[in-house]
Length: 57
Image (cartoon, rainbow, N blue to C red):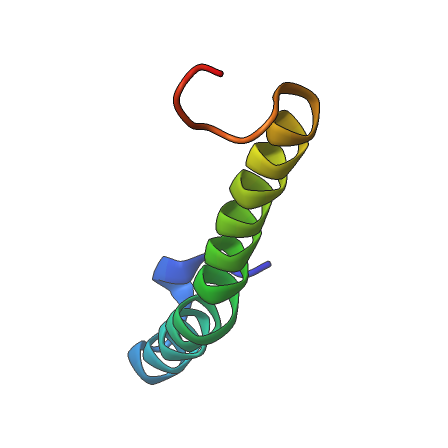
């Protein structure tokens, strides 16, 4: 891996843009789906064992 300070400004800017697009288009949406999905799965598993919420029966 090259030292970022040793790169030409045009090359560095292009690499930063590619990294930003990767993070904004792929990584963050995948992480958001994973977090929301895992939370929903954990609530589903919890309710499987404890029953759905509601007034005491």
